[in-house]
Image 1 (cartoon, one colour):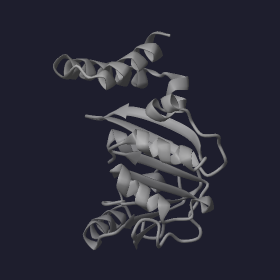
Image 2 (cartoon, rainbow, N blue to C red):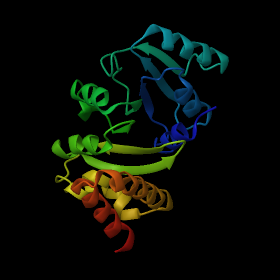
Image 3 (cartoon, one colour):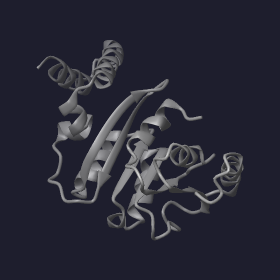
Image 4 (cartoon, rainbow, N blue to C red):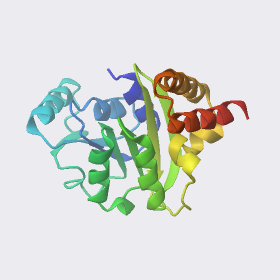
Length: 213
């Protein structure tokens, strides 16, 4: 029913919360959360009627009309007051940033974000606002995806290395993160053989320190 990426996002959702899935498309994630008793209620939101209609088809297919509610919404604009957890995934950083900046995030217990681009800029945004990163996951699903769960509780700004690679990923150094670093390093070394740029060398050195210190 779900891709590996969406299953990892589902794992970060705390039980018995009301979830608002932004850009829900086919509503598969909200349906999965309710069907697996992770959530008792979820909203499947999209800015366009076409994808939302596909979502409604799946809601009916899984007989979840009373538990998964489709909502036409530009980001969090039409999020109901009972929402506790927000999910924003599968978009680029600037789209995610626009959604976050146009909402009162303090209303929510936590926000789960997965950006397809510029994850370091997403962490920078979180850091600049003194928000707290609660959990971080990196998984491979034809591509390395980084998933971040954060809340608006105060946290000192993260340092440059934490922003670039993830404070909790650096702390935990699990197998997926190590594999990601090795893959990233190999790609940079291949590029640097042709480009020979100082910025690539600097990143490679940082990765070596993380891997071997």
